[in-house]
Image (cartoon, rainbow, N blue to C red; front, side, top):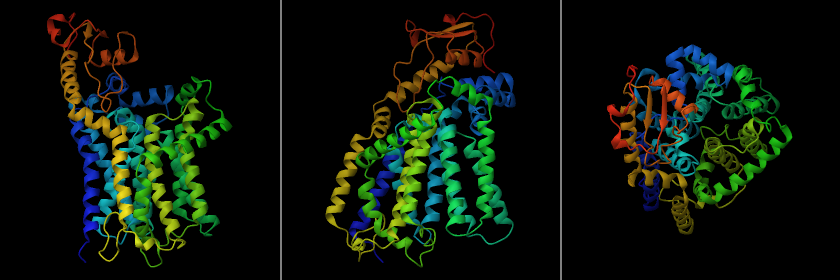
Length: 497
């Protein structure tokens, strides 16, 4: 059936929103550089002490994040591939899109490829729109490994779990069990935020299957066992006690729980206003009703008790915040809020679909799905106008989109890239004490921290160790143009291998 005019406009809008969010991320990927914060420390440790010794050092001395530790200690600097950091943001974007599309395809089985692609596009736009820290989501390797990677793995795991229940018995189904177990192991081993979320989610699903459906599910039991074992492996690390012991406000259980729910309430209130999730939910409602009705491919998946699911959903979101308050006694960092919004959005539309399946709201069929509405389902003009205005307002107040386009189109990313390339050239010169000029511009979508005038600062020590210098100092009296091999105090140190 030929699409209506409003359907074509909705589809074109979805594509535009996706491109609006995706293009600057991919373009800025070419300007990415390793950060003085952590990236050089991981590389220096791995280069000088070996990959496995580096794992042991961090596991016993700072953190039990065994899987993300492996990723960061194998970053491109370890292989002497400086420009490899330009690929990392593009890979992170691609991985997130792939995971979202895989999950959407499982949830929207029976819908057209176009609908699934456009749904993924809108979800990705919402995620980028609400990012509290672009650099920590896609450009800072240390944060990508600890937050973005396990988020991608968790999303993909949910799709694998749904797919497992549809597979016929055989070797492929058993291999899927192994693959799902690895995804649990890797996601939990990347960071505490996703650990809490995934462990509680698996326990909630297994508990529902057992208590409400009277079904003992060996697959879920296996995943719960893997999750518990992986959590034990992370929390038993001596480094965790050292890290938590550095903050006197950590370990306060009741206060942390109350603070988590309070922070969640404030955050959700802001998201409902600053993002177009409410009008998009109204536009999504007819599609939600269609995929949740009896006879639909995933009807049984959405046949859940909606009030109970809502309570579990809120609890899981609060649990995602909990490690920040319990571990360090502080509100969650921006990178944690990035993760929280991803699962808030996915959970929001899943819970909405379950409520839609209850057939409680009459007249919802008069609205059109946001992505592909047939001609005989008219769209309400006021709703479309409200959605358009809300979208424009959300884009206008989005800090993340403003940063991306300001850095890219305003030239800050290009200047930063040029000066960081020059600094890398200087760092490869042989020498004892190397004085470097500050970078003239620090684009927030690309930059985290820099070295300091203090030669003993961790960031300075890590970079000087990696490049085989005795010391590196940030000196504001030095200009980039003045730096040359003659200004480096050479005592015969070899250039970096």
